[in-house]
Image (tube, rainbow, N blue to C red):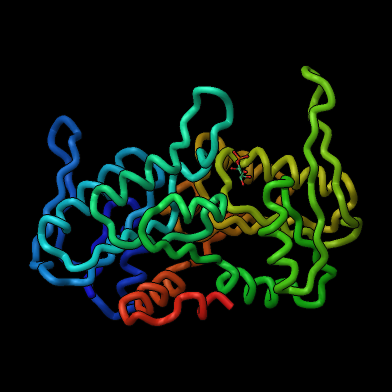
Length: 310
Ligand code: R5P
C-alpha cells in the first residue's frame, strides 16, 4: 500500500499515516508561476495499491484540480489501483437541480474524478447519501458515528439529552445519532410564511430544561446552527452544543459561532482547521484519522468496511 497526501490537509494525512504505520510517499504537488497545478510522484508506484488523501475544501477548485492531476500522474505511473480518499467532498451540496438551467455539480465532479482514473472512492458523511451513486466506481461513504457516539456517552452521561436536527433535511442523520445514544429527537422547522416577513422557527419536540445537541453534516456560514441554537435557548433549553462533521466555516462563521449561545461546536478534522478555528473558545476538533485509517487498511486487505461502522 502507498499513501500520498495532497496539500489540502497535510495534518490529517500524517495522522492517517501514523495510524497505519506507513509513511507518506514522496510526491510534489506544486504550482507553476501562473498557478497551474503540477504533480510529480517521486517514487515508483508501478503495481501499487495507492490511497491519495485530499479533501476538496477551500480553496475548493485548486484542491479539486490537485486531486485530478495527481490521480492522472498515478495512473500514468502504472499504479495498480488508485483510491481517492476524500474526507470532505466539496460540491456535494449541488446534488440536484435547484431550478431551471442550474447544474448538478456533484455529479460533474464525480465524473471528473472517475475520468481522471480513480478506481475507488473513500469519503465521509456525504451531504446526501445518494451522491454515493454519482460515482461509477465502488465508493465507501463512512459515517462518523464511531467517532461521535463514544464522545456523547462520555460527555453527557446522566443528562436528559435531545438530538436536534437544525432543518428538515437533516432528520435522518439526527435520528440515527439519537437512536445510538438513546436520546430524544427534536426537529427545527424553518418557515417564511410570506415573502418579506422574517423566518419563523418552529421546534418540534420537547427541549425545555434539556441539553440539546445539534447534529449536522456541514457548518459553512454558521447561520443555520447559530439561529437554531438561539431558537432552542429561547424555548428554555438548558444548554446547546453542536456536533458537525465538516467544519467549512467560511467568511465570518467563526466570529458568529463564538458570539452565539452555543456552548460548544465540535467538528472533525476532515477539513484543516484555520488559526481562527484553533483559537476559538467554543470550537473543538475530533480526529477522523483512525476511522479513515482503519477503512484504508480494510480496503487494502479486501475486508469489510461496514463492520467498523456498527
Ligand atoms: C444544509 O442542508 C446543510 O446540511 C447545512 O445545514 C448547511 O450547509 C449549513 O450552512 P450554513 O452554516 O451556511 O448555514
